[in-house]
Image (cartoon, rainbow, N blue to C red):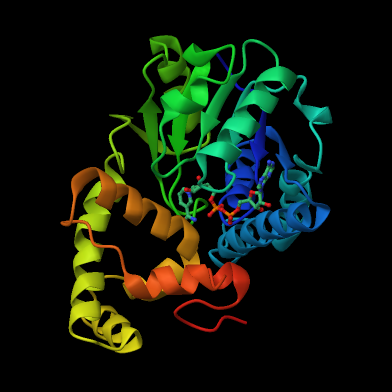
Amino acid sequence: MYVFKAAVVGAGTMGGEIAQVIAASGVDVVLKDIDQRFVDTGLEKARDVTQAQLGGLVAKEKISSEDADRQLEELTGRITGATDYDGFGDVDFVVEAVPERMQIKQAVFAEIDSVTPGHAILSSNTSSLSITEMAEVTTRPEKVVGFHFFYPASMMRLIEVIEGDETSEETLQATTNFAQQIRKTAIRCGEGPGFVVNRILNSAVSEVWKVTHEEGLDVKEVDKEIQESRAAPMGPFFLCDLLGLDTVLHVAEHLNDSYGDRFFVSPAMKELVAAGNLGQKTGKGFYEHS
Ligand SMILES: NC(=O)c1ccc[n+]([C@@H]2O[C@H](COP(=O)([O-])OP(=O)(O)OC[C@H]3O[C@@H](n4cnc5c(N)ncnc54)[C@H](O)[C@@H]3O)[C@@H](O)[C@H]2O)c1
């Protein structure tokens, strides 16, 4: 199946950039959220990323600035913002990117099942939740699949294609093809907790959270040391702020529930989330963000 038109549900940390990636590959995309404010932020993010990418090409003298201006309008023009499902009647592929809560995801899957054509593939960008459980509320569980981008979606090449109990081979193949169509590299994995990447990544980062907590270390000092040692491009606490502490905490708790104490849950992160300080998206987390 070739994807002529796609939709992204949820225009938050991930959704705006996912829409940008799809539009940049030449596919029309609807970007839906529950409030026009969130839609506008997602559209703005998509425009900023496109502008930065085209600016890079101009700086390398690959395209002229006139071409960049024209392409910016063309690429961003492929994304339509929405607060309803009016534009979903002719989509071929949906990416759900709403908060990491099964109740919200299932409500969205029931809705997109009822508003999209029968052939459309319904995918979730979930970091850890069960694809099978999302598929259960639809009439097409064989067309429900995980499609897990990494932050920032416009730069990270990998996508995990996650197989639920009912996902068909045809859906897995079409989803892998779509990943290639939008210039990403797909790996297929089962729906074990954390899938592949977060299971590996969290086993390392939870060790840092644990030592920081047990030794009473300063998170900014830990970040600085890690960044200066060039072990990573930025410190893990700063990265968590960018990813969204609610999402990171949810994944950490899920891994802890699934695999036990070798996956640590940071009490400091729990406190921040309980206070509504979710990192960059709310302006405060381990750091203050403007
Ligand atoms: N943040 C990351 O680094 C990251 C990376 C990979 C995957 N993910 C996954 O992507 C998904 C989204 O994460 P995020 O960080 O973008 O979350 P976010 O909180 O930044 O954004 C979620 C958006 O969904 C919107 N929303 C809520 N209910 C909705 C509904 N019923 N219909 C439409 N929109 C609705 C919210 O208004 C918000 O704008 C989660 O499943 C998360 O696990 C996140």
